[in-house]
Length: 225
Image 1 (cartoon, one colour):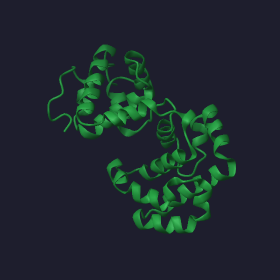
Image 2 (cartoon, one colour):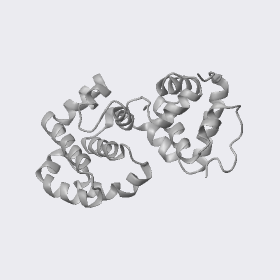
Image 3 (cartoon, helix red, strand yellow):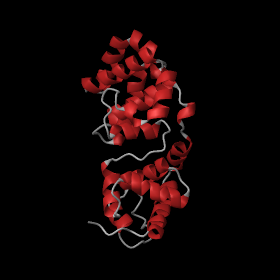
Image 4 (cartoon, helix red, strand yellow):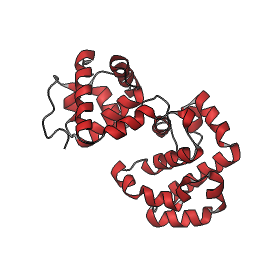
């Protein structure tokens, strides 16, 4: 079992990691996570974020980012669930030319069907009350990906993905949520912001576990290429 890292030391590392990301051009991504909130979420935004999470499951973020605009265009730029359903066969056919996983493409259509049948505002109200429990009822959204989607639509949660699980274990925390909550309270960031800082840092710095779990040190120039 890992020896817990002192909060003061972990805070230092977190702030260094955040500064490195800002220097590397990720300030907008961090700012987006700071400001996204469920109350201002639109149907278009929900469909887009749900599709992003479905497509991203089990795949590299960079791959999805490279094709997401084309899939979005295939789905009419997420104009509305009703419009997608009216043209679902065309949407499906075009989307499959860019992303050849029919289960995921059909899951996106299935999410549009739920939004259309329930009504977005009613669905949003249930998400506000019950959180990830509601999101797990959506096609292709499971216990882990529900936290990814929740975070992306404005709920203040941390997702239990592999990078955050590894950092949590290496620093003596039982869960990514406990790790992010500790840091959030210490520095005044939202849990979701702590999540994205640790996750993004892990994607660009191969020695991220050593960085967070060993004696605090300055980030070398190679730390955030």
